[in-house]
Structure formats: structure tokens, C-alpha cells
Image 1: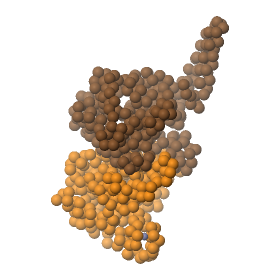
Image 2: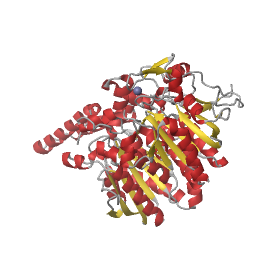
Image 3: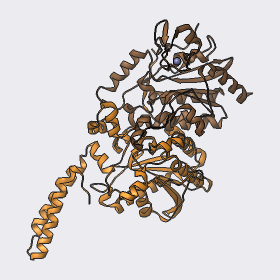
Image 4: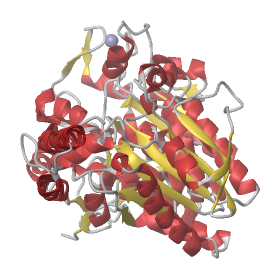
Length: 279
Length: 319
Ligand SMILES: [Zn+2]
């Protein structure tokens, strides 16, 4: 059972899983133990406490796309160290390590496929790749996914999980915020719907660009979503943060997401929204 | 005048010259030759120092407490400024100012981050760190400019958007994101001037435009050198190295294709001669407007979109 069909050369499907290996899974939320099959059937959420395990693009594509319907595109875009950035280790080394550890080439993958029979473009970020940070390749792949959605008139879904813009590409990363937002303005003018799915965690420059700009913003339960990170805010105000601060439910209450959707309902919700917008 | 650590030798010589002038005055003795000699020496020292600044030293100049801020430039280069307040939703944010003014005879909309000069006004202006209502006020004003077909001049000078509890409650991320989207399609020319600190998304939030000008001692980056040091080096002590790594100067950004023009400052920084700094900046703004004003809105927007489309560095490999 696979979500994809292999047509474009140069696209390699990732072999890695961020999700824990083994037959028996211990929930990170409530420490309950259950069988992997049960867990996968529940879209990697805990059957006891509802905890949403962080998952990557491979799992999301599998979750959303009908069998054999998905096709990745622009997998040939690769990061490059334009600044010659070195901190404790060179950026080139960080990239190689991330690529080796995750089996991914960058922190986002883009694909076209069917969601309960409805064609859509899906871009999905991978937190496992340098904290899901947005550098030039992430910005460019998102931009091209938006272009394709506009050209083909297909609804766009972006699943975000990111610590923000990538430091090692400095101002080039920062400008991806402007690039992707400008592309979304074009998509809006073409009246093609965009559904933003915010997962744990989505912060910084990704929240402050495409993740907040959906026609419908959908958050996963308990996801941390914000601009500044909680640690920085705690430093600023000099006291503890209120319980539930910057969580999905908090954003719903303050009017910045339209709905909080359990992952097991994500595919059905998106399919329904596509019907409502395009029907 | 406030001096930075690396300016100490210059400060000492300047002080010596002052003392000699006082001495000559009070004793009536002729020290002209000696004073001239020292003047030449200090000028050589200034040239040597300011022509070879490290990236961190430029960050320090960008943060110089005497550096001209947005309202200084507005007053130095425009007339008849009328400040407009409030986002019409929640509040007026003093960390962003804006309004209408005359620039070289035509009405323009000016907007920019605003820092305070003394303890009280620094707090009032929140050190130039906007809340969401600041970004929303800026957008309201820019839409006003679009409605009445006035070009926009935006001044960037912020350490970043304010990382506060209420800022998050009121949607800091949404406010910035909305501005990025809307600024990309405003049907009037937008000239952006980075005049001090270009602190990440907080700066970019009013920084999308057709021409990006940057003063030679300003910095612009995805993160401040201090925070970068704290995260990547896990210590606050590597800010100099972080500044180097981040390639955050006007020259760097020009080479990266993000900044269109580097605007010269008086030797030693804009604060040494604010009038001259404003004249140089106004000249660059005027040239940009002269190029942009004849363009019809469709061309303007298309070219702006293409400009941002090109930004970034990647490779395309078919294996
Ligand atoms: Zn659980």
C-alpha cells in the first residue's frame, strides 16, 4: 500500500520514519502502551489521551492521498550554502547530516494527488530536517507549488511544522516569507482555495507568512503555534506563561484559526472543504 | 556625542584637539600648526577605522544612540508632515509611525519603525518593536496611499517584532503575514529604506517594495547576531562571529540581490551629520521614485512579484 506513483525521474521517496520503531508504542503524552497497528489506524494519535505524535511528510501524504494517486514534484531542488555559513559546524555539513539522517533533501516536499477522489496540491514540511526551517529551497518549492495550484486550478494545502526561517541562509531565508506571501496573493486573485494546516510546532517566519494566510486555517489539537517562541516571551515578560498559551485551542479562541481538527478527521475535513469551496 | 568602543582612539584625539583650542584661546598662544597636525591625524584615523569596519562594528553603528530615526528623517526630508494614528481595530502603536507629507513637491505616505531617544521615550516606543496593531496601522495607511494614488516611503529600523504575551494574543504572526501579502500587490510605488536595524520579520513586515535602499551602516538579517550566537553557539559570547556568518551588511545584501542600492553615510555614521545623511538618502529615494512613478500599476506589481520570485539560492539537479 503506497500513496505514490513513481513517474518523475530523480524523485526519491523517503525511506525514513520520524515515528518510533517497534511493535509496541509508548505514548509521549500519557505513557500508555499500545500496538503499532492500532496507532497507525489512529493516524499516529493516542487512543487514550489523544496525543498527536509529530509525523513527517511521508506519513501525511500516506494519510491524505488515495492509494497510488500521489506524485511528488520539484524533488530535484537542492539547498546550497550561498553564504559560506559556519557556526560550530559548517552549514554544508549540517545539510549533509540532515539529508543522511532523514533521507530527505529538504524540509518540505510537494506533491499532487487525490483526496477522496478530489485532486489537490499538497506541500508538507518536515520538522526532522533542521527543525523544519525555511531556507531558499523551502520557499522556492512552496512558491512553485502555489504556482502549480494556480495554473491547474487545484486547491492548495500546506501542512506546516517549522521553527521558522533558517538562520544559515540569513536574509535569503527571510525573503522567502515575502516570496511565498506574494505568490499567495496571486493564488487569491485566481480564486483558488488555500487550506493551511498548522501542526506542532509552527513558529517564526513560517507562521508569519504562508501558515497564517489560509482561506481556512486548520490546527491540530495541542499544536504550538506562534510568532515568538515561548522561551523568548517568558524572558520578555519575566513570568510564567498561562496554561495553554500559543496552543491550537488558544488560537481558535483568539480568532486566528478556523478550526482545530483531530488528525483522524483531517482527510475527511479537507475533502469536505474542497467540495464546499469548489462545488 | 556617544562613542563606541572601537572609536576610543578617535574620541581621544578629538578631545585633545578641543583642549588645545581652549588652551590657545585662553593663553593667546599660536597652536595652529599643532592643531592642524592633529586634525590631519584624526582624519586619517577616521578614514582607516570607518573604511574597514567589521560586520559587528556596523551593527554597533546601526544601533548608535545618536543615530537618526524615522521621525528625524521625515522632518529632515519632507515638509507638512501630518501623523496619522491607530489601526482602527485595537490601538495606536507608538513603535510604528506614519502619515502624509510632501517630498520634493509631491504628496507621499511615509511609514516607519520608531525608536525613542531617552529612557522614557524608549519605553514608550517599545525600543522600536511593534505590536500587531503597529503592522495593522501601517497597512491601513498604505491602503490609504493606494486609494489616493500616493507613493509609499517605508523606513525600517527595528530589533524585531515585540515578543510579548499580548502581541501573540492579538496575532503578531498574522499581522506580519497579512502585510507581506498585501504589500506585494499595492498599486503604488513602494521605496523601502533600511536606516538602522533590519531585525527579521519585524522589519520585513513593512519592508516589501519595488526598490530596497540600505544605508551603508545598517544591518538586515533573519536574526540578530546575539540571538544567533545564543542558538547556534549556545552562548551569548559569539555575536561577532555570528554577525560575520550572517552576512548582514548593506554590501552583503546588495551582493545577495536583496538590496538594490547602498546609500552612503557621512564618515563615521549617519549620526555624525544627520542633515547630510538625510540629503544622501533623499537623493536615492528621489531617483527611485523617478524610475517608478511613470510605471502603470500592472507593471509595478508584476515587476515587484518577479523581484521576490527571484530571491534565494538553490540548485536544480536531475540525478
Ligand atoms: Zn496518550
